Image 1 (cartoon, rainbow, N blue to C red):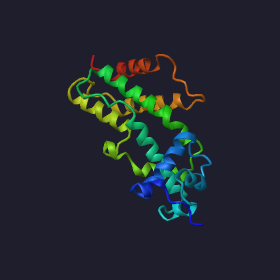
Image 2: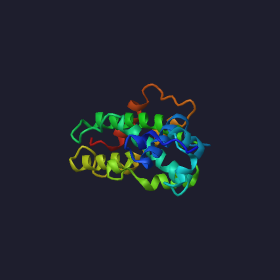
Image 3: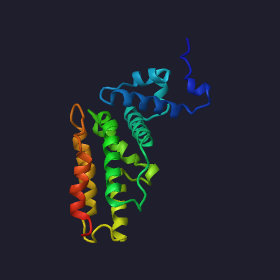
Image 4: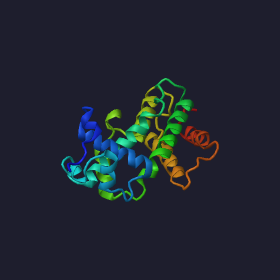
Length: 197
């Protein structure tokens, strides 16, 4: 008996994209730790061997699936603030975005094999010109330095790392619960160090 064809093939969807989507759905539900090719094939409704026709190895598929999961999570978030947004509100928007994003994606990175992480990182973020949220925030702060809203000598790279790193750290806990007022307090601390006085 021949294996069932994936519904995606019948609907005219590219099979490789369908397989990546199946991996992304599984990763969103249960993370990457212990995820098998057989489980991904079952989710995609294809024979296990089909995956090896489209990917060099399991790690490539997991990296692409994780990438798809992160991009889907980003797509569900509100847009980044405009460059002319009041600085405190803009930083709060970036901070809340980082918290919301990390709450969704951090569990997917638990028990992630180093070679999968390396391949995932190499994929970058094409929707943001290859930049992650920390780089986007640092670029925003540099633009605000040029307009005079951020002090000329302020360490904007460190400020961006501090915000994104703090959001990452607070969401690593199990269960991940963001303390009341965390985003506001973090923005207040950062503004105290970089805003023009």
